[in-house]
View 1: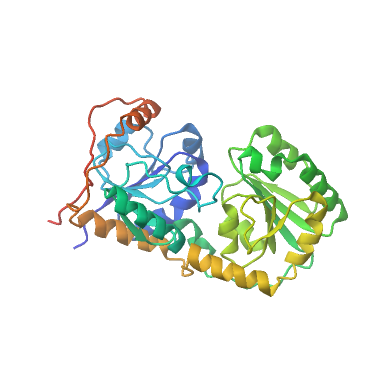
View 2 (view 1 turned 45 degrees about the horizontal axis):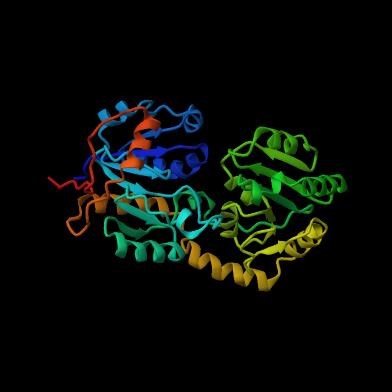
Length: 359
């Protein structure tokens, strides 16, 4: 007989919702209970159309979840549940190693990693910290991307523009890039779709949105996958949306990407952008081959079943003996910041991974 598990999807920002939706669908399909909680107003606003929301941390504690699927960097240590890190993006490598995707915050029991390139590093760090487990599952957000549907290339090619919120890396903040896209819109040789990160300042968003024309459409959405499917290529900077888009094996043109990887067509000067678009639209075999190698390391799951694996893995680990794991660190400053954010102060803290014994 299946136990009636209670899941909580814990978020902070709106961009976490498309990551949680496939997990919610899988949980509901299995007949388990699922609730959502956001520790910030921006995330709460994005959840306004859902009926299964917990509005207050006290409601979360009263709910008593068995498993917390976290799509944020932190989770309250004072909730006695299995704390699973699901991740809010691929590793975009925008910052240094210690400050980026692989920062160990001493809060999670289980990391459900996306592919070999991240699993290997979290496992290496696990040997040092010894207070969490790492299991590769793939990433729930990209489930709706599969199976990849082959479609004829558009008569007028569609180019999706995406940009990170980090100002020094963002093409959206670059006036010369804006003017070049504005010029290309007027040629009507390309259809442009554009989406910007929710953290990008409103005046930047408004400027790009004002380009609206028959061949330029601005989307105010965090649901990127429908846009990925319609686009022939992507134009971006150092946003993690690049990795998601590449899973379709379509080329990406980047502007001043600080990594300059060989699977990208990177340009450093605005006057080279259109030629890079023309090259990308030929789908060059050398680039496609490098994309293939990259995505096999990034996310080698093309079955659309990563959410299934996350749920299976979480339930299995919930019941597993975890006595081999060390206690989590004291983390007093981080724990205080969590309490301050939630306006909930308690001395209670669970530093041992939660285990549920089957009855």
